Image 1 (spheres, one colour):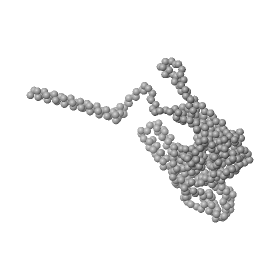
Image 2 (image 1 turned 45 degrees about the vertical axis):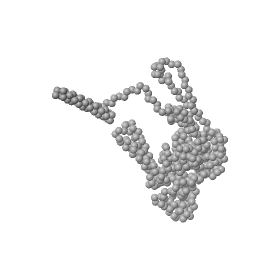
Image 3 (image 1 turned 180 degrees about the vertical axis):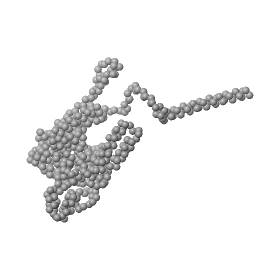
Image 4 (image 1 turned 90 degrees about the horizontal axis):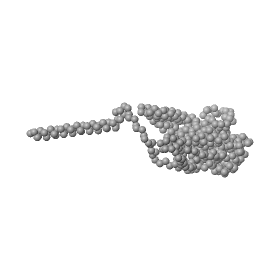
Length: 470
């Protein structure tokens, strides 16, 4: 009986120890899981992270040739005797990269012969240029352009990803200020490449969007008040971006630094939404317009949005308008409509002309207001008049066809001016000098006022030309 009792006690002790051990293990596992899931609730004062004993490794491969894309790179490693490693490690000059960028600022073309080297057909296409170009024709805008490029190089030398590429640094051959000796018509001549501008939208003419490539902007500098209630095709996506930004700003977990950035984003998006609701714009895919640097819009004879212009490439002359303002260090940009006319392979990502073989001829001071939807017939008529004032052209100007499927009907249709003139017998006036929203000439207005028909109607004073349908 004693042996049985001793054996029983031993079993009880073993069971007791096993139970205590199980409780300890279970408690340890529970605390470990709790620490992993809620570390901030367990400790109010987080343990400071240990100081790194070596800098973090740079992951991935850094291809120097790609990093310096478009820049000729000469690299050497020079060594000189130094002190002990512990001392040299603390000296900034003991391990140094001396970065120096050498850029040759180009000399502008000055004579008609130099212009012809870039565009051989130019003197023949516009024979009047020979009397307008001289050694003193170089515009100060050329120097300002390259001063801006050099300044940007200096500011961004520590950010190699922001440096201008070789292609973008040498994007302008010349800038000349010209004036015809007889008519005194002024013109600004540029020779450059052609990049693509696919920006712009107008729900009144084209309710559907034409795509949104990288860096796309639904607005252009050339704008006018909307004429219908059709919403801008990019308004909904912009409002969604605003809502996402506002929702993130309202979160309690959003950091103060992030909220500061979001305030700027929200302010910009609200302004953009207001602009899209109020205005219509040129459309890069359908309207022929060019882009000028911001610096070109300032000076003694500034280029303004709405000024008429010509694009000369090969053996053709294209009538266009200044429709947008771009960066101060970039020259040579046109709408996607023009780009595809020059090169059918052009896209928002593929420039039509990479060489400096495109001539842009801008007529400062020719912009006319009010701005409005493009009238391509008026554009051509006005440019033909301006070409005659600089000696004429040896070939007809390119005729742009309206490629927008169909115009949006007016909310309250009224008889057109052309219908009224046909009924009254009043001759139609010659094209008025306006690109966008043509108005009748003073002579035609006087003739209309002398008739007995109700020509004083505000809606009857609109364009006498209907839009060209495809």
